[in-house]
Length: 93
Ligand SMILES: [Zn+2]
Image 1: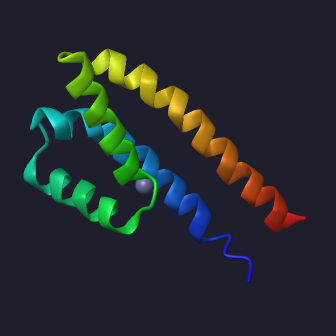
Image 2: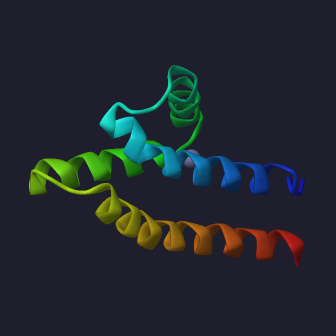
């Protein structure tokens, strides 16, 4: 079982979800996007943890700008993508 068709889709969905996180926390998402985001959270192992981490950061700092969140998210995402790439290499070889 290779499952090549699932990994790229999951990666893309997570990337889109991460881009929606700041809007979601600000309550700025249109209802359709918000529902899509929440649907992804229920089917993803990583994004709910990620959202929880960001909520903790906001609770600790009191105020955090979307720009700060984005740079923090990028750092975290690099780690996630490295993990997924390692999985893909193993699947191909
Ligand atoms: Zn995800």
